[in-house]
Image (cartoon, one colour):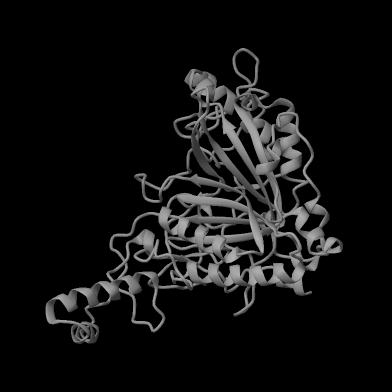
Length: 457
């Protein structure tokens, strides 16, 4: 799970306060929640293009003036005096992520700090649809995503988020294995997109797996996230049909006394050992290099998506000591059992007085560590989910696991194979859905759309 930072982030999916909108702002993706500033941003400068907030503010001001002075004249007077200007947004509402990054060409939603609300959704192209229809759809989707991420209302807007700012909204697009056959582009399908192998612990539902097209939506406001979901689903029209949808959440930025790594529904600090953009080999591990066979994927990444149900009733019956042995870290602060703080390196060679490893051989943190997997690592950026309760009364809850890497075979597959053979945490997890998607670089030029080099190259 990636860590959040306070303030701004680099253009790799940069969060930028709406008052400044500076896509060159620097930062990290540490996964920690942004710290709240001492004061909120000031009112936005007047603009001809109405934002969601300004549209609602104008309507409200006109209505109030009409009641007082009688009709359109009052509305014009209010506009002339500036009474219709929107109120300043809060820190969360004003934060904007650039759809078209100024420097780095990666799509938003990969290194962007974790958002509080998320939707994962997959579509299949409609029967008879092909490359032309797919290109038109990605063009519409990209246009709508750019408007929404800037806090602007798209055409035929539902009004769900009229009074909200961008709220760190990100929209990320990817292509599944089946997309290339249906668009006649099999020769341009990367080898890295070959189907994932079967794992012994899998209990996958094909109806909630894979798909031609994949979208990840994240925002720090639930209505903003839902608004984006509905707008993109409407834009699909007759070109694509919904295959599956999953809804998730994380801790809201600013909910803790100080920025910290998020926790999952087991109560564990989750994401401590994530690669960091400051690492020298971060780009090499997470993003496709310049020498990739498929030129259209250079600068992109591969997303593995898994719906992992947690057996919370069984987990919560374990003592704190037992839970910490399963994970290999302290529950209170995420520190390794060998001591220190959350960021202290694990001493995998440390033995206790009984001669046994302090971090058990099958502890999740040990089995998943890069040191145990020939240096393999992936950027975990998940959401938690809770979809009610099962027939036996157990919570249908867990993790919408999303991880990013330059090559799934050398990252997710290598690590998951080892976890599948001897991870103590596996007894408390059920992998119920899966998908692998090629996520191309961002559309950087005005009017361009995500995936154009593939679909028009």
